[in-house]
Image 1 (cartoon, one colour):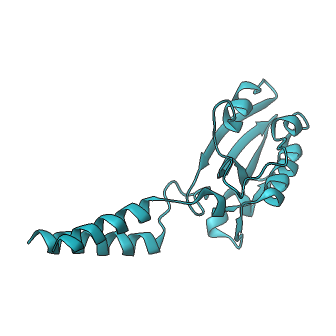
Image 2 (cartoon, one colour):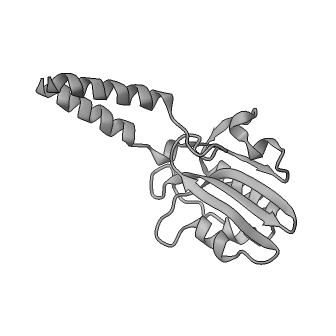
Image 3 (tube, helix red, strand yellow):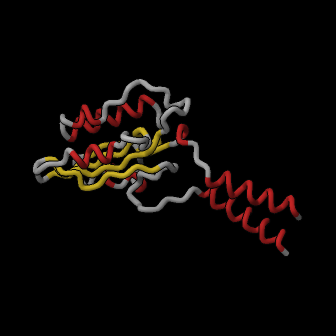
Length: 169
């Protein structure tokens, strides 16, 4: 029965571990609250793999909000795939004048002083105001819903719990 405990613990561990370099996120930009990007999980927007191309697309989206965001979203050509700096999904809502902008994409994961949400918040002013900025590191976590669940993880977690329960009795 000891092997069941070890197996259950291993499954629980692997369910909790996410590889940031293979994360897939929603990537879109909208100037309208009724556009697909406001609720990508309810529209036809597909998840995309985060890589340097997606990081550049996110930068282009950000420039569509305000030209000052160009410098904030600048990303050097670093080896993100090799794991030097992980990648995260980004969700941002910014108000420029009376218009709200939705941006979803990929960004470098927070590391030390590298935090795009902090930068965007610090540059907010009367005309360009950041209403929401968050990063996350699970598949499709930058959707419009607050919580997302990976069905495969749920099955693995449930199986591990049952194995653990069986090994105790």
